[in-house]
Image (cartoon, rainbow, N blue to C red; front, side, top):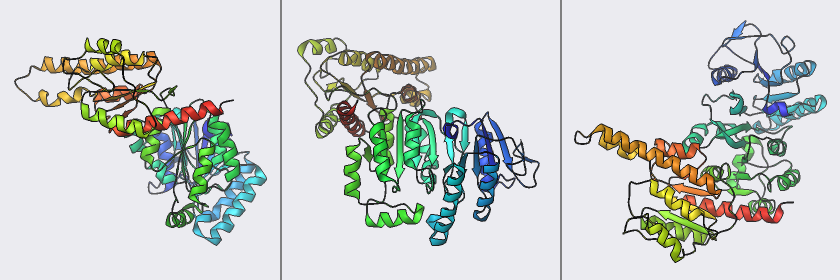
Length: 472
């Protein structure tokens, strides 16, 4: 089953020269993504498909590690039999129209399940969009956008929900190790995928979008073993009676009672969010930052208002913001302007000297009384954009200031890595700014709002505490 994530060769059954067909989109995406393994398009007539040599069936090509099937439902049993004859064991069945389509589809899905069990297929789907594995430059989905590499695996019962968020994930500064669209889970279920990803060295965080479970007790047993070592983040839809009906019509999932579900997730250490925003925020932290050893937080801002807001949210999240002793405050005063406040929060007051953040962070993170740090107000060189248009400001000065901003980001990254404590930043600028991009690419989470950074720290701190009590 390891070859499901790391195939050295793939067949695409239903590959097409018609760009409007899903088989064509998948084949084109594999090519444009830069996958370096062998690719065998299966087409009954064409000699080539998107530059690859085509074959009439899987019986005519070398045996691949993985086959993606996107053919009419009526043709699927025959194709699966051919896969068995060709000794192919890993299969992605993209074709839809099964359990989610009603009783007739349910019957067809049972037939698929029987065939898969007979031949011991590791079968993904049906009714899915495929798998993406950025480390292999493999995009075996219908979505043309390719996520960048990172430590987060995204497993989703809604294929479109995962694939259509590739761009959002990029804007968040996240990178992905794997995307799996599970579809109806006729054979392989979310339980199988989390067990597979638990042993994947490229994955540090497992993110799940769930509508319901077909094997709840088995999932809980697996999750209980995984979460002390690797966090599982989960968003479950179908929390309401109307949402449950929608989930059933989408993938045929059994949603279950929300209150019971919530209690079960808490018992096994799964972090449940109510939105993708929650899950992406938490993934940025868990994917790169160390877990805090306690709940004591230092706050460093360039304005008093955000500092107060951060303090409020920390208190609501069960975190403490301890006062700094006189010796530490005197150290900070040697760096900061006279208008600064050196308690906790530390308020530098407004400044464009971003090096101060790294210098103050070095002092705060070195304290035995501080477990984590929240920073608000860091910005990068895009702040200088307006000066580029001014005839009164020499361009060499603007260039020098931009370099200073980028150097400050690099200095802050070195400081964070040196102390090995979690640091979360909030900023009015986003990934389009090169300074923010430098921070995110180095694994430092940057949030658009200070409250989101503090809430994320609260979640991560509670998870760290849970792990202490459940590590064996």
